[in-house]
Structure formats: C-alpha cells, structure tokens
Length: 635
Image 1 (cartoon, rainbow, N blue to C red):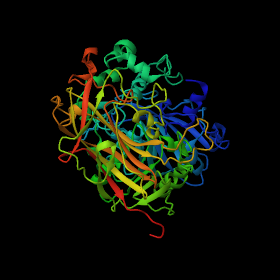
Image 2: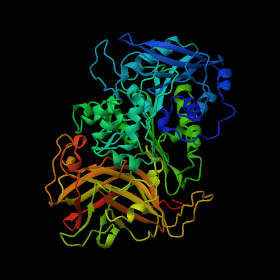
Image 3: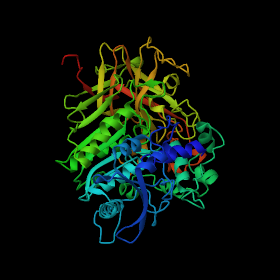
C-alpha cells in the first residue's frame, strides 16, 4: 500500500473499512486536518474491560469546548485505529469531518482480537441469546463499552450513538440488540447480515470469488508491529483477475497454489459448502430484537458487497421491534461511498448531484443531532431513497411503497420481453451452451479485486455472446418506475447435473442518448445497456440450501429466487432488458456443471452443458416486478 493509500485509510478512520473500500480520495479539506482535530479535540486512549476481563483498545476524541456536555458517537471495527498514540491525530474526512465540525465525542474501538485489543477474533461472531454473567458476544461488548464510556469519559451528556459501515455496520447492528439504556441512536450502514444468502461471501449459495479471495488473505496477515506496520497485500502478479482466477483452476487450488495456509478463514469457509449450522449461526436477522434506540439503516443501490444487508436489517428491525423509530436510507452509491466521497457518479453514469455530501449533511447529521442533542429540526422519513434513472431523492411512508403494483415481464420468442403472457407452445424454449472453459465475464475492466462500477457497467459485451440469452421490450412510451425486490422465475433444464443461473435486469438507453461531458474514456451512451440489478442462484439449492440436489439431465425444473430491491425509473424511449446466463466470472466461482462438492472439484468435473430456458404457457419464465404508478406533475 503506497503512502497516499495509507493517508486515506487514516483519515476515514474506522467509519470505512480499511483499504478494501478505498478509491482515489477527493481533495483533502483544508479546514479539518490533523492539526485542526488536535486544536479542537483532545485524544485519549483506553483499554476498556469487558465482563470477562478482556480489555478492548478504545480511542476517544473529546471536544475542548466544555461549554456543555456532548453526546458520544461510537464505532467498533476490525480494521485498526491508526495512527495509534495519544499524540497522533488523524485528518477528518467524510462523515468524520461533518460530525467533528458539529461537535461530538468521537469514540472508536478495536474489536476483540484485533490490533490493540485483547481476546480472540472470530469472523461475524455469532450472537448468544442466552448469555451467562461472563459470556460475551459483540452485543455484550458494545453494551459494556457504552456503559464504561458514559461513566468515565469527561464531559458527556449520557447519550450514545453507534454507527459504522460494512463490518463496522455489522458491529453496529449487533450493538443495538438488547440496547444499553444510554444508546439512543444507531446507524448500521451496509451491515453484514447473512454470509450465505446475500452478503459478501455468497449469494444464494454461490461463492463470490474475486472480492473475497484477496480480502481474507489481507485480514489474516500477521505483522511484527500490528499497531504501526501495514498488513501485506496479496501479490497477484497481474492486473487481470479473469486471467488469474481462470489459470488458478478449481477452487481447491486457491490454497494449494497461492494462499498456502495463510488465510485460515478462507479455508474454513470452503469446508462449509452448504447452509449448515456454521452459516445459520451467523445469520443475525432473527436476533434483531429488544432494540430500544432509533435506527437508521443505510445502503447503496450499487453496493457490490453489502446491498442485501441493509435491506434485510431494515426489514427485520421493523418486524421485530414495533413502535421504534426505524428508517431506511438508500442512495446511488458503491460500497461505503456515502461516508467519504461525492456520490456524483459511478463509472460513466452521472447522478447530477453530490448525493453523498447531501446525505452526510442533510440526513446523517440531522439524525444524530435530533436523537443525541435534542435538535427538533428533524422529521423521520420511513424510507428516504434516491430514485436512479430520474436522479432524485424520494420519500415514502413504507418500503416497498404501498401503491406499487406487482406485474410480470414474460420471456417471449425472438428475444422479446413483455407484460403480456406468452402465447408460445408448451415446450417452447431458448438454449445455449455453457462452457466452464469459457466463462462469461462479469466486467470488461481488468481487476484482481472487483470493479466498483460493474453494477452499472454496459452489458453490450455480454449481449453479443452465444452463451447469454437476451430479452427486451419495445421502447417505452412512458417512464416505468420499479421499486422493491424482484422475483425471478425460471423454468429450465440442463444436460448436466448442476448449474448456476444468473439473471440481470438492464436499462437500455435510447440510441440518441448524449455522451458524458467530459468524456475521457470515450464511452457511448447511445444504446448503453446499464446493469440495474443482477444476481446468481446455484441450481442445486433450488429445493433446499441445507440439502442440495442434482438436476436430472434434460428434465424441466423451476427455479425461483429474489433479486435485491431497487428504485429505478426506466425513462421514456428506453427499453427494459433481461439477460440470462450460467457464469459470471470471476465475480462468482465457476460451477463445474456436475453435481460435486465444488471446493474439492477436480479439473475433469468441469463440463460443458446445454442449458434451456422455457417460455411456454405452462412453463413461463419471467421476472416479477413492483411498478410504481407514474408520478405526473401536479399529482
């Protein structure tokens, strides 16, 4: 990691997790340097005892303004609190800058077993519902930390807020369970909720390869001086992730040839290829109970890591904690972008506003000011969401909106897509050959991690492949706004015994759509096929994630799965497109297309398969959507 990257990592503090989510930083604000923070805050470092005696390293910035007591904002993280040392301050940027300038006591903690804290680190440590006096989990550690802070940090007003992005978002969600009485507001942002169904590691049982391989290597590295030395990055020796992972071969080679025991968690995950007790214990959703603070869950529509998490956290918090303030905020952001960047564009797609700055100043800050400082200039909005396509913020009193109507887009002959049911014969189908030796790339951008902008990338490269089915509507006569989750229903057969099924919803721009200005990459937006939502389902889990079953070659079977929510307007003159394919590489590991344990699959297990997608009257493959009535001026 170069000097600039280290500086960026320091200045975003723990609100953003390590180098994994860092892009080129915006210009550093001149009014919130480390010198500014030292002028206005005093830094303290504590080792706070937990109920079992383990001490957790905690850094606290206390305002020098002692004219009144101030509330505490706490973030818990596995990503380090550099720079360590009471005399070493960080630059303030993004959310930290906005909050620091408004005056809060800013506390951050290394979780168990990480950097300055004692104890053992456990990935997504399971919640323990029946704890004894000395039993601990992330919920109890947050409780004990809050209790100590309000009793020992000078000048606090007895009110605490808890927040963080991604892994720190997970710790925030756990910390609001069995809320401490002093915890008045919590904001889990891009929280991990379920590592087998939809966040980070797996989607519907399929392993997300490229964004996790390097990360779990990185996080497991041991250095001589963890408080000062940087963790070692994996050296891919190429910028081309497609080439690297293809040459790696079967998944078993990931450790045998490259990791070589240096990423124990990665190997542990591969020993749990089904939804067994290991993954079930790490599903936090049913434990989101006994929450007594206000909750604002935040996520990004184009978050390639944790889009599932915030939507599920909001839903389950709402379901299990009636009567509390529980709101949802979703913007047009990649992972964590709202906490540090401008949020004005992603790849070539402009949002025509600095949406992240708006969020930090007009949504996040007022939330904490209201619940921690008593500011009355705040009215909760149940769902405050950015509508992509029209590029505007919208407010709803429920999510999905109450007025949305379910409609179904059916696959038709000759690659057409329509709301009318198909009139094709019972056995009508489209087919393609899926070859693991030539997997469909998920992106044309060479990257060994993942392309942050792939969730909006032009899909014309995929549409021209013979192993991708394409269905599209006629040009729309009026705007079509889709909200909430999508439901894919595929009637399929395969000549193999296992298969992945990838469904992508795409916004096809009008042919005369103007190009960006400036346009340094010479992108052509006329006919641009913007990915809006896409996901994968590992076919052997179609009946059960606990007990996978092989396909019977050639037999028609139904696969149904949910694609995560959206709030997107397809503009008049655009087309709606759906693509179906059986690989998405190297975002998702290759399915051998034979019924085997994929983490131990051999080269000879990888086989071509003929895939058929049926669209007959009694086997109608389709995508069910929620349509929001047209919002016309004056209504």
